[in-house]
Length: 220
Image (cartoon, rainbow, N blue to C red):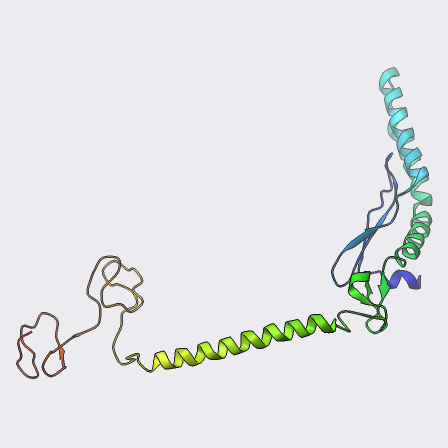
């Protein structure tokens, strides 16, 4: 069926072949937003009758005692199975014809979409022809975010000019293994980290534990 091809990717088969609840029902959904619509339930009377026959004979044979229950049930199920395929196809075709009143087929991408996702004036879905007002608002927000990002980047560059990139920094404390984020002392245990002490006179690095600056002799 040509109609079935269009809905091959956006419907779900809810049909039941056997039992007292046997019947046909299909759930169709919008290709864009996935909102669903279900076709009215159509009873599969042959399958329901098979279920009733199976249950009735099973109860009767359990009361009087017998071993033909499986044979009768299988015969009833076989009768239902014989007519199932054609009945299901006919019900599916009716469901498709009904679903076409709830969905719109895009002239460009041929997808079926709900009324909220379709522009009837253009005959196109909103994926192919996005709503102009919505796109304008999205563009405004994108422009705002881009400008804020650019200004924040410039601010970061200015702050980076004051950052001493040559100073060694430990990111993990060697004593307690806490993250330090480059601080002079570990926030977890207070251990002094990689930043060297500088001489107050010549600004040269003074080794850990030294009492005098090895460059100019100034006492620490």
